[in-house]
Image (cartoon, rainbow, N blue to C red; front, side, top):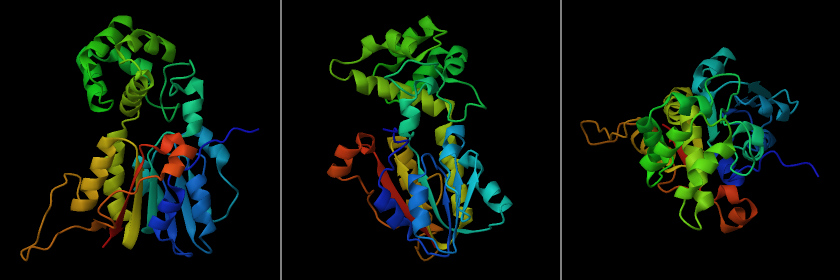
Length: 297
């Protein structure tokens, strides 16, 4: 039986959040296995979908459909590529910030804690530096900061010191071998997942990419256009929440002379949408997902 590339998270909820018009223009900035994109296409008649993914593997999943334009690029450049394809504004933008099941399950990509492989972790293997190269050139303090900020790891300094003593590491197994003694009993998988997440986020500059994307989405969305973001990390979710609440990356609430909020976008719902227990049981990787929806004024 063929392995499923990726099971889309919060599929029904995200499509509903986009409030799709059959003749509208929509953007999926994280195409992956194409689950969300294919569902968007089902709701379009004369409309268009522009899908982004910098991972060369994702391009193999693109369906033959004249309504779909696939852009094999990082979505930090979303505005330039949308305009290059002749669109000034769009009706909805979807971002699923998670790593695909395929990437997690491919040992050679370096995302997996289950399969040994090169310590790579790049979403786009044709550019940037690998996790191994980043660790090799980084100081103990820089490694500590990454583990603390992106992995939210307790004892980050001790872990970083141990990693520094063993570099160059080369493989995911080497990273696991030199750090797993720091994991609390019964929390070994959680510890490793948090550590791998930290290095992945640093290597792919994920927080900076998200900030650039959010700012550009504000410029791209047509009035009443929807922004739908699924995040899996507290830093990402807080960034999206504050952006939708304030309309800016600083999260600063600005009001006019009459006390009215000055923002170009506002949250459709005050609280995030979470996966149901049924979805979590069906797809464990949805457990930490939070979906937020914003609407352009």
